[in-house]
Length: 387
Image 1 (cartoon, rainbow, N blue to C red):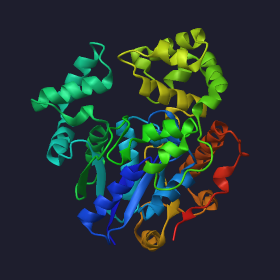
Image 2 (image 1 turned 90 degrees about the vertical axis):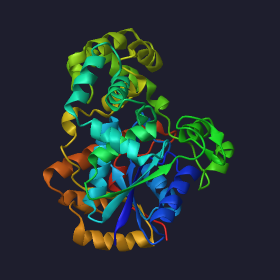
Image 3 (image 1 turned 90 degrees about the horizontal axis):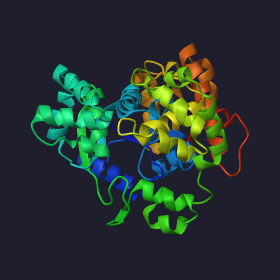
């Protein structure tokens, strides 16, 4: 059975996410299975998720997703290009996904396709280097270069459209695409029309105001939200002790841009993580990039830890239709499927190494909780079944 893929963080899963799934079904047919590639415990904006990945995956399965697969941390906490490439590899590796559905501020698929084509032209890369050389941050140089070549405004200024363009650059040529216009609040906005942005809801959950988030959540909230701030002393120790070579070894470490030297200097001066980020931030080095570097430094990962390609499919949650889909994937998938943690021990070396790194990322996510769990949680959690 052909399935549609969705890339998400579900941090947390809310009414806007559920609407996206329902709209995908409306366009493709109710019988079309939905497979999600979801970020694990660490997300693209450079922070921990609001709660563990199995809980968030179960929320999605209860909210209409049939199968939720993990996007490993080394792709989940990365630039838009790397994030999209890793997520598409997860979906393509299933052997059953032939359509990608994504949220879009513009909903204009032809404009998004035009931009994706421009980004692969040599003139674009020349223009980006020229603009970046003036001190512009890469996202701005990227947007202006695309606009110059397109002769008009490009959708790269909008977060979901920016990711959509990267998805289009990564998907197989024979895939179908569904661009679902975003409903309600803006990406980092508040609440509107029965929908709220995920960032708005995280603020409620992390400040103990779960009742204010409740109208926009599809599953009742219980417990305390994870918060990266709980690791502040560890983070401060990391930024004070890393050397230039250590920062340069991280993805987007900016060795050629002089960023490592700046980070070392700011790390020695800062009395808090917030001060470190404030000191290090410039137009060329935006906060999102710095936060991702901070996560990688905290997790003890380097650029060398990210394989060239996704080596396995980790199942986080599924429902009844997802179970049938897994049966089909056993025949069609291009990658090993992990339905139990023990299956990771049977992987080739590269897969075993990445799973071990993911386990370390989960252990360090535990330090973001008020009740710190023991190490080894990654090896004890099986996928959640939502009948």
